[in-house]
Image (cartoon, rainbow, N blue to C red):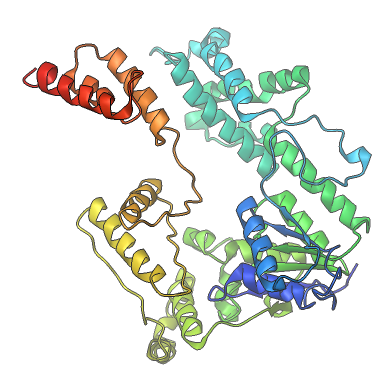
Amino acid sequence: MSDRPNIWTIPPGVPFLPTLADAVASGRLTGGRGSAGLEIADTTIYVPTRRAARTLRSCFVERMDNRATILPTIRPLGEFDDDGAEFLDLPGTLLDAFPPVSQHERLFSLAPLVRSWKSRLPAHIASLFDEELIVPASTADAIWLARDLATLLDQVETEEVSWAELGSLVPDELAGWWQITLEFLQIVTEYWPNILNEKQRSDPAAWRSSQINAETERLLAGANRGPVIAAGSTGSIPATARLLAAIASNSSGAVVLPGLDKELDDDSWALIDKTDAAPSVFGHPQYGLKKLLARLGAGRDDVEVLAGPTEQLAARERLVNEALRPAESTDKWLVNKAEVERAIASGALVRLALIEAPDERHEAFAIAVALRLAVAEPGHRAALVTGDRTLARRVSAELSRFDIEADDSGGRILASPPPAALFLLLAETAFRPGDASALLDLLTHPLLLCGEPRAEARRLAAFAELVLLRGG
């Protein structure tokens, strides 16, 4: 173990994964082991997602320039298969936990408990209320509510919170309704654990935490065969934070943080996690990183920068950091006015545009045009970052007009492929008998052939529309 934690950061204006690959291949993060031959073959790199793992492998392949080598072991840090562990070399004593139950099995096991909840409600609690207690009216309603219970289960297991603390959360004036809530939550506090024991399964979040904890114990025991690097994680999950602490304190370990702000003044940095500060402080972008640094036993001065951005991007980063400073220190905007003006003069706002669209369609079209213009430049790539899945799908559809297929990390909804759309049209037609518009949508679907050649099927559909459906 090392007395000084080995912690690095990559600024926001620098491509994260290519920079990480360069640092590993050059030996900067691996104690001098470079990319020649088998020098980095025993290196293990943890990244947040499977997508990041795939991209990082591509970065190593591009950097090797067709030279024969064995790549490092790259594993997702926060995503695990439902029916298997990601860490394959754990001590046997750490694998005693039951394997995780699948998401669908958990959902369909919780739904009957939700539907039958009212019949198990004690009479002395039900008598506290004059009005009729509402329970799920159908199996579909029960499944929706069971999904919320599953989300609550994952949150409690992830944050390692005790269910025993629920009784003290609500003030006395809400105690009546809170008793109803506590009785309802017995589904997950009492009945569900018994079901898991009978099935010899565990919750997915608990299984994930157990695997991360097992890897932490393995590293603390010095069982790693080579350098261990964790990159891109903010340690928001307690189990992950402990793993990062173990890696940072390991003599051959390194933690690479994403976009730590080393330029914010010390007084403002101290405000980020003060308990007496405004509530908005806890939503500050640097709050999670500061909390993680405290867990790692390090300060900002202990963190080294792997690579710096260009002058223009550094100026933009300075401008954004100034705009996002804690609310209690915004009086320094006047003090730092000259510095902000210098950042703008250095190109902080160059090629930064604001588009005000009248509606969602024009918004998606404007974004699609901007992406098309960006990728038209040789060697350039472009990305859309949005939490609005509807907007992302609209932009993907608009890009298809330009023969550009977007790589959407959010995936596609089940109803979007043509076979699924045909199935939905069949169901809609069956449940809306006599509806000409539903029947017409079904007849004109390109996959509805009725045993005929495609051209003949299209001709018959047009004939049916003209003769049978026009005019009702």
